Image 1 (spheres, helix red, strand yellow):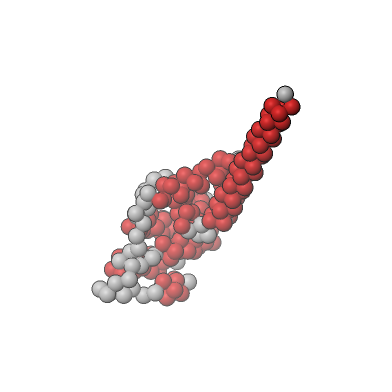
Image 2 (cartoon, rainbow, N blue to C red):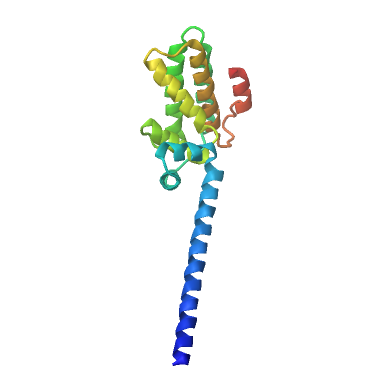
Length: 199
């Protein structure tokens, strides 16, 4: 009888220990995953937690973004495409003084034209911002700020300083997305040079 009791005690102890180890492993994995998402998404992680109201929902959303973008075929621009986009940016920015409201609208349209050229699938703003946040987490805040000003501009509520800020935010995103595939056909001006001329 004592032997049976001893065997059951050992079995029960081993089962409890296994359950404790399983729980510790689960918690460690969850913390590791949370840390990875925080590192990858930066301030977008906190913004998503606040927007969705819970860490669990936010992390689920961020993982879904990663999966969605993982299925996309993102590619750099050819030098010819990059040169065309750079020229279009310079042209629209040159008209800011004469038509700030129109330039903000054009900047939004140019960024939305650039995204599918890079391989992003088009959708509503939140989906685009979410997709961009996966590979460009530090710049997505600029995109959100630019979009908020664009909405105010569409309602006739944005002043000239806000419009100038919107163009700066769009330019930051534009420059980040203007990745060029190396090639021998033609060489566009470096992004740093384009950014310096745009300032």
